Image (tube, rainbow, N blue to C red; front, top):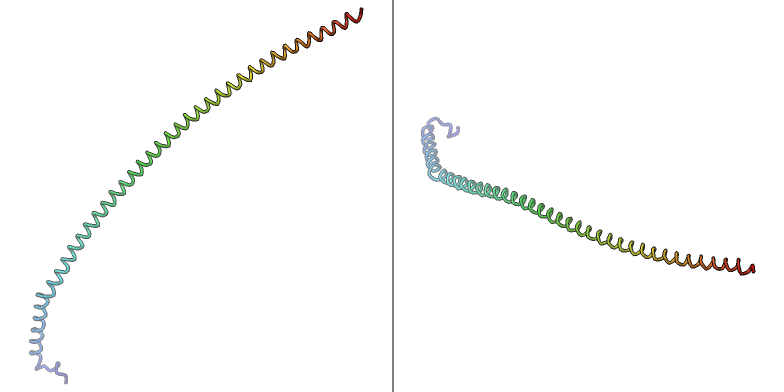
Length: 147
């Protein structure tokens, strides 16, 4: 038969079981559990520190994103203002150019009208001279040939 199952050795087995469990309990209580508690407390402290770093980083990221949005809006307003000024300047320049072109066209048109009037005057004078010459020739042929 097996020695563990011998009923006469139960008491000594229970005694040594109690001694071993007590030693194990004392060892665990004095050595292992304090180390585990120390590790857990260090871990908790580390996790709390990391959480606070993460929260501060998230806060900083949110602040930076807000700043980026504000800068984007400022740049957009700035660019819009620059574009508006450029459009106004180009509009003024365009109006000036149109005014210059109109003035130049008016000058050319006036000069052309003057030249046309001068030419018309010259043509009238030439036409009158030609009519006078033709009338004189006709008059001479009618009255001087008949005689």
